[in-house]
Length: 251
Image 1 (cartoon, rainbow, N blue to C red):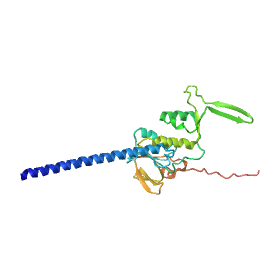
Image 2: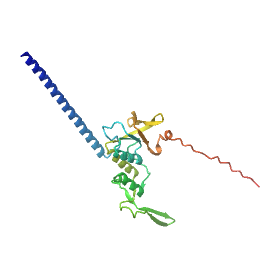
Image 3: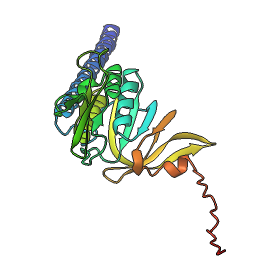
Image 4: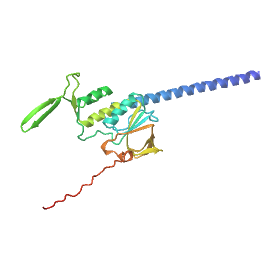
């Protein structure tokens, strides 16, 4: 009788442990799935927001990057989207994710529009009041003439585009951030991390002032004319030819 009681106690304990284990797995599964749903909802809300790229917006499960891109202008954002579509994990660090407000690059030539089509980014020209451009008009001394783009061999939609550059850049950033493996982060890259002549990543300061280091097998710097990394990437030697002073002689 005692043996039966002992075996019953052991069996009951085992079944209890199994039940607790299954309950733990079930609770853990629900916790993970709830967090995944919450992360997805948060990400969707981020991308739907009109200020989606004004703060960090990207995958919450983002770990090590395959590529770090410094700068999210036309080149950086387009490259991030292209590499992201290729399955690369891309971390983009941009000093200011607010809409740029300066006059630069306001005209996209037809060749540029064809390149956008090739990259799958032509929809970035939508909803920014972009105007189609078919050529140039020249005015001088009361006379004028028109020079049209040679577009006869292309689809009727192919033309130049005139737009506000800042709005175009924001659309490119939103397109890149829509990919789950692309992360846009506002921060200022202060230096490159170099080991034995090889760039391993970057050191940067976040919007909140936190100093961080990011690593990746490939780092691409395309932060424009205001780059603070140019001096560390190249050492241009400007040669100033010696000009002899002009000598005037009186005969």
